[in-house]
Amino acid sequence: QVQLVESGGGLVQPGGSLRLSCAASGRFFSIGAMAWYRQAPGKQRELVATITRGGSTNYSDSVKDRFTISRDNAKNTLYLQMNSLKPDDTAVYYCNTPWALTSVVSWGQGAQVTVSS
Image 1: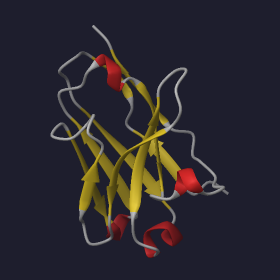
Image 2 (image 1 turned 60 degrees about the vertical axis):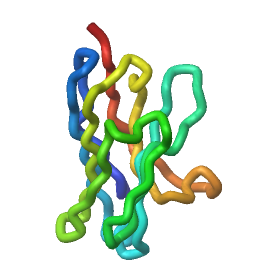
Image 3 (image 1 turned 90 degrees about the horizontal axis):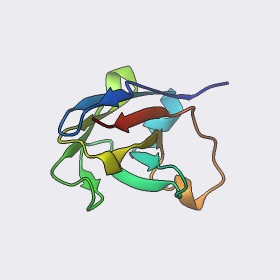
Image 4 (image 1 turned 30 degrees about the vertical axis):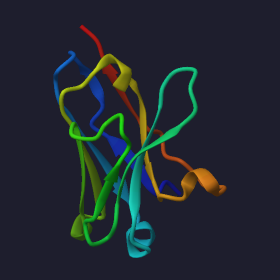
């Protein structure tokens, strides 16, 4: 059964914006923290941003001051607002727990973000 569904990706020009959404099952939100990851072509999946159930956030240096992670606990939905997009942001974006890279986990289909003129 699918429990993580990413959406909102697309093609955007450099400097543009996109907002990604992640619909998660209740058990993910019940344990608290969530995170966004991305995987660019030929590269390993990397952590982008994390958020606790209470809303405390952390970001990778590559996206700090440009991306904003947020959540709506009532809707079991995670968001990633991406501004000032760069070609290097091109990747498939995934949501999961903050410890997903250190555990055996299942991943959703991801959302493709392409930044190009």
